[in-house]
Image 1 (tube, rainbow, N blue to C red):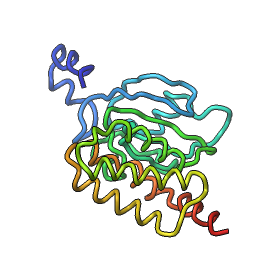
Image 2 (image 1 turned 135 degrees about the vertical axis):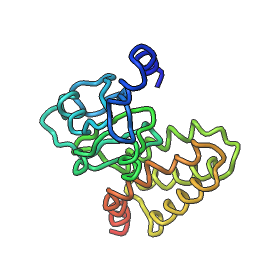
Image 3 (image 1 turned 45 degrees about the vertical axis):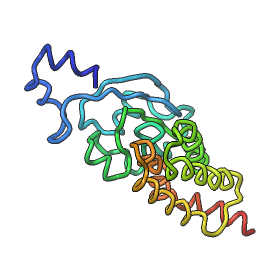
Image 4 (image 1 turned 90 degrees about the vertical axis):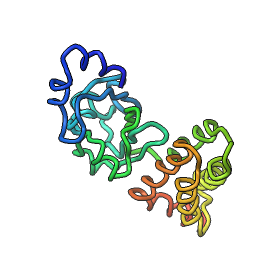
Length: 207
């Protein structure tokens, strides 16, 4: 946001509003990381497709591997499958898909990425970020992290997915601050697009 201020002051709001989409104006700083050739921070106009950012600017996935997913919005963001790579950089569009733009962190995942492991990774970070003031966030994150850790070890149990969904719902509705309310975002999006990987942990345990 601050990176845009000098341009708006220097060139005017009309110039800035002429860039981007109808509801998402101007440009956005995007931090590229993960399984991508060119990591770093880039500035692109809103409306630019995720495909352009990942492939044209980021150089694509290294070692000839296939793109599996992109995670937008840092730890509290959402994971989108490769099939949605043509999605434009737009607040409303990405929000509806479950991946809020947030600070602009774009993490790229290749075909070898385990989505359950990634969900646990994001939640592990958020567990440390929670101040612990309210129960829905403090205890909700801990319970979700326990379940995801077990699932990451291939020891998921019947009812784990439903419990995760319930904890996501309670946390987003009852937490006091934005961190607690959006902690569920990476799990919600992962379950929306990669539910089969969560279910696979339960199948393995049953065998």
